[in-house]
Length: 65
Ligand SMILES: [Zn+2]
Image 1: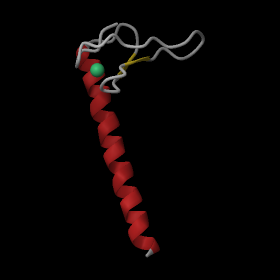
Image 2: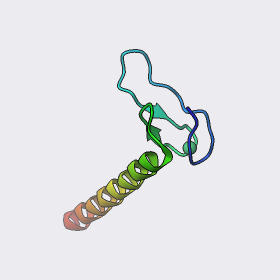
Image 3: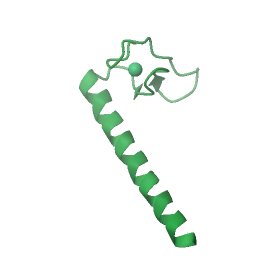
Protein backbone atom coordinates (compact mmCIF):
# COMPACT_ATOMS: atom_id res chain seq x y z
CA UNK A 1 0.00 0.00 0.00
CA UNK A 2 1.42 3.37 -1.05
CA UNK A 3 0.96 6.57 0.93
CA UNK A 4 -1.20 8.89 -1.20
CA UNK A 5 0.68 11.88 0.16
CA UNK A 6 4.34 11.06 -0.33
CA UNK A 7 4.23 7.76 -2.26
CA UNK A 8 6.16 5.94 0.45
CA UNK A 9 5.40 2.24 0.79
CA UNK A 10 3.39 2.09 4.00
CA UNK A 11 4.38 -0.31 6.77
CA UNK A 12 1.74 -3.03 7.15
CA UNK A 13 0.42 -3.87 10.63
CA UNK A 14 2.11 -6.79 12.42
CA UNK A 15 0.11 -10.06 12.45
CA UNK A 16 -2.81 -9.86 14.85
CA UNK A 17 -2.64 -6.06 15.12
CA UNK A 18 -5.44 -3.76 13.96
CA UNK A 19 -5.59 -2.99 10.24
CA UNK A 20 -3.41 0.09 10.28
CA UNK A 21 -0.81 0.69 7.60
CA UNK A 22 1.54 3.49 8.58
CA UNK A 23 3.63 5.86 6.49
CA UNK A 24 7.00 6.38 8.10
CA UNK A 25 7.58 9.62 6.21
CA UNK A 26 4.51 11.74 6.97
CA UNK A 27 2.91 9.57 9.71
CA UNK A 28 -0.38 9.10 7.90
CA UNK A 29 -2.21 5.87 8.70
CA UNK A 30 -4.66 3.90 6.58
CA UNK A 31 -6.80 0.79 6.69
CA UNK A 32 -6.79 -1.63 3.76
CA UNK A 33 -8.95 -0.38 0.90
CA UNK A 34 -9.14 3.22 2.02
CA UNK A 35 -8.69 5.80 -0.71
CA UNK A 36 -6.65 8.99 -0.60
CA UNK A 37 -9.65 11.02 0.52
CA UNK A 38 -10.26 8.80 3.56
CA UNK A 39 -6.61 8.97 4.50
CA UNK A 40 -6.46 12.75 4.13
CA UNK A 41 -9.64 13.13 6.18
CA UNK A 42 -8.13 11.08 8.99
CA UNK A 43 -4.92 13.08 8.79
CA UNK A 44 -6.91 16.32 9.11
CA UNK A 45 -8.63 14.90 12.21
CA UNK A 46 -5.30 13.82 13.65
CA UNK A 47 -3.81 17.26 13.17
CA UNK A 48 -6.86 18.93 14.66
CA UNK A 49 -6.67 16.64 17.69
CA UNK A 50 -2.98 17.43 18.12
CA UNK A 51 -3.67 21.16 17.90
CA UNK A 52 -6.34 20.85 20.59
CA UNK A 53 -4.01 18.83 22.76
CA UNK A 54 -1.32 21.43 22.32
CA UNK A 55 -3.75 24.16 23.33
CA UNK A 56 -4.88 22.19 26.38
CA UNK A 57 -1.30 21.64 27.47
CA UNK A 58 -0.47 25.31 27.05
CA UNK A 59 -3.54 26.22 29.07
CA UNK A 60 -2.53 23.82 31.82
CA UNK A 61 0.93 25.35 31.94
CA UNK A 62 -0.55 28.83 32.25
CA UNK A 63 -2.75 27.73 35.13
CA UNK A 64 0.12 26.20 37.06
CA UNK A 65 2.22 29.35 37.19
ZN1 LIG B 1 3.23 9.57 3.61
